[in-house]
Length: 103
Length: 467
Image (tube, rainbow over all chains, first blue to last red; front, side, top):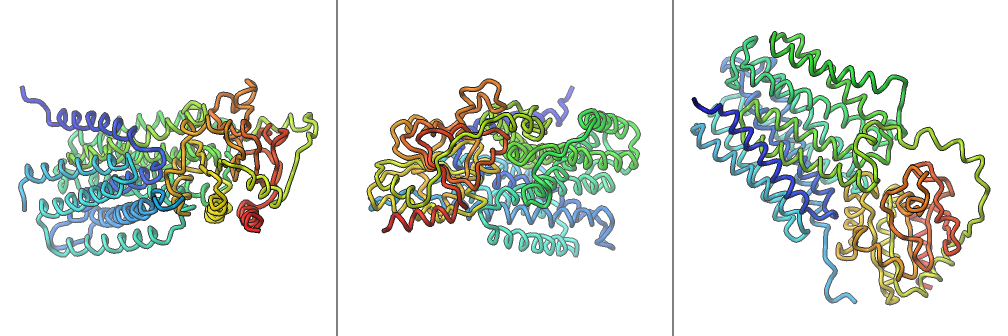
């Protein structure tokens, strides 16, 4: 009997939870705010679903109810992707070490 | 058009890049590179999606337009947002992830052929379960984050909103969500799908309104976690590895942050979620409390104390963010350093309105991160320091947490500010903090209260130091 592909996806999911657990515990507490903004950005990879939804209409009409929801989701996810990564970049650029010549 | 196997491998690659993005955050030096990995992962995922659909007709143009519109809004916000508003921003972004998950789920429910999930009214059972869970969690994330956003923005009062029968009502709605998912999967009725969404939006709203302002660090972390689980639910529906990996990462990340925040307050997760903390109980003992004497001083006294110190520890809190005092504070510290005074910063895990909030504000004010310490790293140093400068923090310094088992904050780890030779406490008035309890520190022999706006006081002290 063949194994249902769902089981493979479930395995990836469970293992990723463990990877996430160990990776996130190693994040330094001073970077917890950038951690939140970057997780925000990467969870917007949901845009792949939104793109599929947006392109789901048949060739003679671009818009149907389903594709409109897709387009809206694309826009929402794009706000998050650009906003999330850029604000993270902006924050991380501010973390500086003490200058050596000082003191 | 690329094959399904090839695109699956690329999705895996982008999932791994997302892991590396989080891994980079283990130190500030590697973090910027980590962020680039994240961006690369996102570009790969989006490109592969376009290539695997292989439809570059008008629809493709529209997708690009919406990406550009959303992207410009996002970029604009990212550059304009003041660092003090990060908690609101993150709450707002969470709501967008939640809503995007809901929209994708709706789209997949209405047009399952596009996702290879069957036909309307005859969607594969597994996919339908995954889809409805993803949609429900997404809806909860959306409405919950909107409420969190309103509370943080001040559009809605930060105090808990409590009414009779709140918990039973929430329980009923949660149970009906589970029942609805079951019925939806057995009947495939679209009406049930809409009712499910409505119930989920409602429960997200109801879950967050009873939670008070200072518990926001837990709420934001929790919603962060939810947005991850929503993404994972959609990932299972779409059979997309990148989404499943990311959802799991984000879900566990948010869960860990919630745990750290709860530990920082010595409260259980359920205690926070059930809400209402600090809202009711404390009005009664205010009357019985005798007026105790406090010593108050001005900027001149504070400058004198600090000038004669050899080491100073700064304890910032949410009040510093409200007063936007971080830059003024840095200037004060610069003046102190010119006088050869050793200065370090002590950050409590729940200082501010989100995890790491104070660290970002200090970084914004150009404070080097190796002068900023976490509670465990610095707590023993208070006994050897000459002056503790508490600016905008309150409950996290309250010695009652160690001495009075009756206190609502008993057992909460606190910064041992009272062990310092002298304590300068910048505060607008003697009013109790968020937890509604009086701070014993105000009445200690070695405490000097500085009643003023945090920013104004800090600037005045700097002036006096420079004389």
